[in-house]
Structures are given as structure tokens and as C-alpha cells.
Image 1 (cartoon, protein in one colour):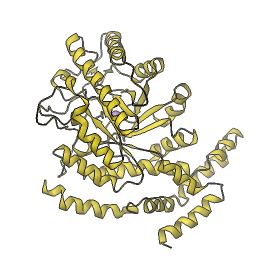
Image 2: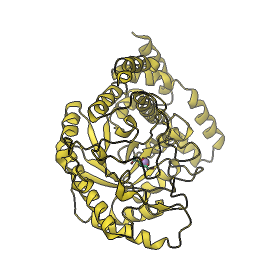
Image 3: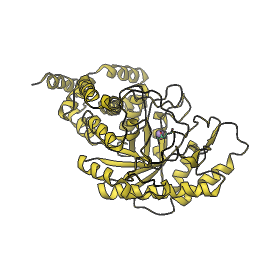
Image 4: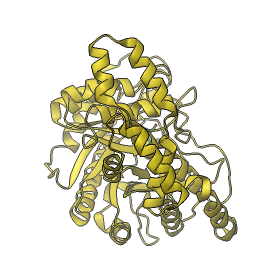
Length: 418
Ligand SMILES: C[C@H](O)[C@H](O)[C@@H](O)C(=O)CO
Ligand SMILES: [Mn+2]
């Protein structure tokens, strides 16, 4: 028996005394896909022929060597990261990762054929794909407005891009046998206090109605809309606020996507999940780590991440919440960034699966807050790490920090030669 297995057996006993079936928890965990965002690998550059500077009020800092310079390198780096992350996952693409054979193809002309290589790759690797229209880093988004722009021609361009994106999502879903989540995030907003909040919101609503007019089978494509409180350059007003999209999603049967960095600094997404799920069947997450602002730091196993995991698990929502990641750090090795952030997300789910959730709920119902707090605290030092290590071993990925050795060799052999 390996040490990892021996420690696992001890952990199993500890959790077993609380009626927690650890083997079953691992079986459940195996079936939860995380949508890994491709854009960590190239600092949200994309590979368009007529590529523009990053815009839309999002920003990446750092110049760690080895970023992917083309789609082949990006896929290669993703493959490396996937060998270090336990489980079966998805990759989340943006329209700006289209492959157009050196030809400049405008975003409103993108088609499934421009993503054929991604689909073939996903088939080969057994991955699902998710998608996003790219509504920034483009001359037509320079003023910070897209679907709510006062100019109908500009709106038309972005409406068409979104309609094309849904068709690409449908293609992914059809080809891969797992529905693609096509998520729409737009940067639209104003730096300073607006004199009219309603008109841009009316225009955004009309644009969305046009984009979603065509019914697409949810077996293939599921639409999501992502809100935001503020961005760089849209500090005072964002057209697509949470209330706006939540209202739209409820009325039009769309998925609301909540990004953990898109709220007021003291407002938590973990506290929204139960409310939102009382009114919608599904919701989507962009798990990020805002440090004082929507800074998109690599996800850490902090209190909020654990709380998100707990809210999903204890409310029986593992198949209702589509978990995606959204962070980008160019100051560290990018393959390591994916590995750290994704492993942490999975750890948070495992942590939640190993809690005596029903018992804790019961204590709360009984008003026994002393025992509720005592147990929640004691479980923080239960041998969760031993179960995690065993999961990694069982899934054929490096245990504990062993993955770092692999990232270091990959850095020397591949990344530093770029
Ligand atoms: C690149 C992503 O689409 C982007 O990060 C968006 O999801 C977001 O969160 C913007 O702040
Ligand atoms: Mn996001």
C-alpha cells in the first residue's frame, strides 16, 4: 500500500464516523467538469490577424516568459496543464481564438469552420468546449460601448457577432455531444456619472432580444449573460448590471453568469447562489479572485472559494451550477496558474463534499449555533488533504506539489525557448 493510500484509509475512517462516504464523494467529484478558460495562456491576446490591443476595462499585468504565441502553443500548454489537474474538464474559448488561415475574418463573419481544429482537438482529448463572443479589443468597441451603442451600425455589427457566436456554440455542442455554454459579456459603461441610465439599458435589451431571437436547441447551446458592477473606464456605470441581466435571464429563460470579481468588494457570490437557484434552474460562475478590485488573480483556496463549494454541494446544485474560471496572471508561469487555480476549485468542491452538511443544517434548524460553529471549525482540520492526495493519485496526476517539477521541466524545455 502506498503512503497516500494508507493515509487515505485513516482519513476515510475519520470521515466515516460522521457517516460521510469518502469513496462516494470522490465518484461525485469525478463527474464535475470545470470550464478552464483558454485566455490565461496568452494574457487575453487572441490570435486574430488584425489583432487590437486589449481593451474593455480588463487588464493583465506581468511579463513572465513563455506565453503562447499562437493557437498551437496555446493548445500544447493547455494539454500540459490538463495532465496536472484531476478529472474530466472543459475548455472555454473566445471568438478571438478563431483559426482563419492567415486571412482577416471580421468577427461578424466568423463561422464554425474557423473552430474546426479546436473541435478536433477537443474530440481527441475528450473535452467539452464553451464559447464567448469577444466584445472588446476591437476598433468598434473603442468607445467602450457595443450592444448599447447609440450608433445602430455599431450595434448591428456586435449583434451579428453574437448571433454567429451562438451558431459556433451550437456546432461545438453538436460535435462534442455536450452543450456549449455561450457566455456574453460586454464592457459597455461610462467612466463618469451618466445623465441617462435607462436609454442604454433599453438599447441593450433590444440588442439581446435580436441576438436570442433564433431558438437554438439547449441540447447543443446554452446562452449565458454576465453582469458587472464596474470596470476600468466604466467606474460610474455599467449597462449590463446584475439586476439588468438577472431580470433579463429570468424573463427569457437564459442563464445568469456571476463572476466573483464583478460585485462590490464586500459582496460575495457564495451568498447569491441559493437565492438565484430558488428562481432559476441553472446558473453559471466565473470563479476569479478579486484583490481590492476585479483584478482576476489566480483562484486561491480561500474562505470565499470554500463557501462557494459548500453552497453548491449542500444545496444539491452540482448539476445546476456551471463552474467556469476567469483569472489571468502574466507575472507567473501560465501553466502553473491554470494548475493552481483549477486544482483549488476542485479542492473546494471536495472540501464541501466531505462536510457533514445534513447534520450542520439540522443544528441550525435546532438553533444549536455553538455546535454548528464548533463542527464547522473542527472540520477545517480534518484530513481533507489525505483524501485530495488519494484522488490525485487515483486520477493519475501528480500528488501534492509534485506537479511543480513537471511545470519547471516544461518551462525549461518548451516555454523558455519561445
Ligand atoms: C475574458 C472574459 O470574457 C472576461 O474576463 C469577462 O468574463 C470578464 O469577467 C470581464 O471582467
Ligand atoms: Mn468573467
